[in-house]
Length: 481
Image (cartoon, rainbow, N blue to C red; front, side, top):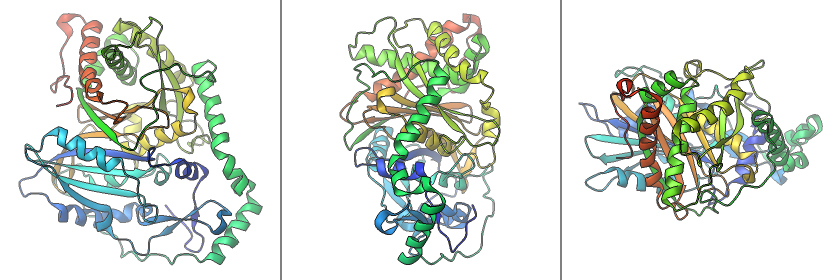
């Protein structure tokens, strides 16, 4: 990222919209929980801070804060935090004995439920110690406004190496640029309003509507249907409170590939079909009467290519696709066929990006793409879909942080207004990890949904492959521990 020190970079309309939409019950940060094995020489808070101090120069945005223009004459600007204190952003927590996973979920949910401090750079990282079996966790929360494109680098990415021995990345001594004065901010705001009317205060007030309309048109073209109708009543619809519940599922990537090889389509199609089966079981467990044609409308952000590389609608290489998940269909193969057809429309456009190409992009980080996917959802009215589902391919080799091997990684998406839960999926080192974020009161049984993921995948593998060919991956389909 380059910028003129005398002219602060202005937030883009999508960034302003995400800040404006944020409330105590609809936080706009994306979370990530990674679990590591403690190395032989140990791992502690000081080691984590030293690693970040060495590498934070790779992510200049993480030492900048949002500064409001006097009179709100224009969008806010990014300025260096002259009082930046890395120990404020990197914190530590400990689990009570015996350090089981439920305690980790509870602590993480409480942390992710809280708003970030608008007067500081919009991110936090927690070292969570005391996890059983000689493990620790690193929890990150990053505001969507910090993510400015597929090429962006997330704070967690700078921690990781492809080998146990950390690479050396010491940069020059950082000297924050002086904060611009009120006169400069007003002068630049007036200049921006005169030269770019779309950045005027009136245009900014309309940005949420215009972006939403553009996304709606894009999604309508992708699905081939009109999207203006309201959603029917569903347990997935709720006015979220301020507290969350988390649940995780662990599955074998080999199982998804086995179904793909037998039935066609992509791993993402199989993942969506697996989630559909899990949602069906969860809704039935809630005694929801499902008609044969019942569906749950999911907003599935998809990564796109094409000339120019940047999609002007969402400000990054991510577009919005609405997919009806056929939860009323009892046959797992028919559920998969329905989803394959819906997703094939997007792939036929020639703008989709293969997962292996995506994972190899320079600057790739799963949290970055989960954040961009969530931003795509923010532009659409909540009347158009029940939940957001992202699936981002991650590295398929072990990654390390200062010698500690990362063994699992789970994404945590924020809840959109009016929705009870969100689902993020990330593949890493032969497994596909599912993170479910839910409103604490609307979905007290979210753990049952996580448990149903493994059952749904096993059902799909059995139906898709002859019994003699069924070979579960080494990790085996497993639900939340």
